[in-house]
Length: 319
View 1 (cartoon, one colour):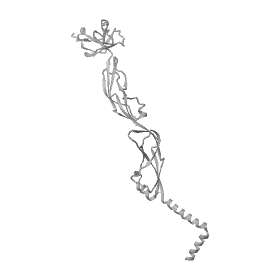
View 2 (cartoon, rainbow, N blue to C red):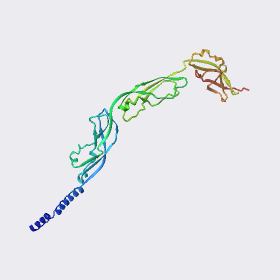
View 3 (tube, rainbow, N blue to C red):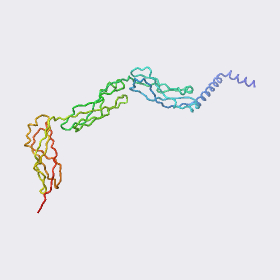
View 4 (cartoon, rainbow, N blue to C red):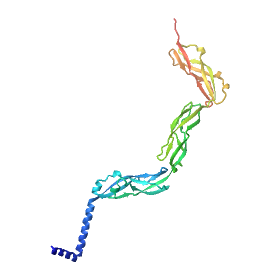
């Protein structure tokens, strides 16, 4: 046995190359074993940004980062990625565009994560930040249509008339008013009021309140008016019918004017015509006569012909 050992020792002593080769083979086998017993996993995690309350992010170049974890197969099999997340803490705010290092929160797995090799790609996020400010912004009412003929919109009141907006300074500097949703005032003849929502939606800006109470005052353009009585002329009454008290048949015409010239109007020239061609049966009818021989400027006057109620009876034949 001793002679055999001595022979091997003499062999390695005489052959240096064989000695070095054996050491290298042993090291190779060791690293191959370690490599075969290790593996890695790769996944993406969202990057969570923690900011002071008075700071806003205008732009962010990435929202996720690739996480690569390398370790033993046994340890990785027991690893739960749900306990990990990526974070960036902005403690010392500097306005502008800068890169900030992404860190891996290890609080839940502090001891176990020390067994792994962990890398992030990318390892930083580019953020553009600026301060948040508060600004009073005027509310702008939006109206559709026009009041009825002879009426005009005389005033608009909003309560409140401004909102408090909170958001990034550069964005608020470009907002000078906030509009309401449209309110239709087509053909109205009297003032209206209601609560109306504000037409504003911006992800980085909040407003208070989100609606306003609007009051739209409507006034007549015609300050002067007079009601005229005009005799009615009946045409085309069926021969088997007659009108009760036809001699007392009077119609009414309301004339409204922007100017006080109503006393100069000559109503003796006016005629109210009641065409009964379409009536074939006796009964009570509420009809609107046609006004003729009236020459007025439609821009200065508003003419309202009132309906007239007549009683029509059938002529009795006593032969």
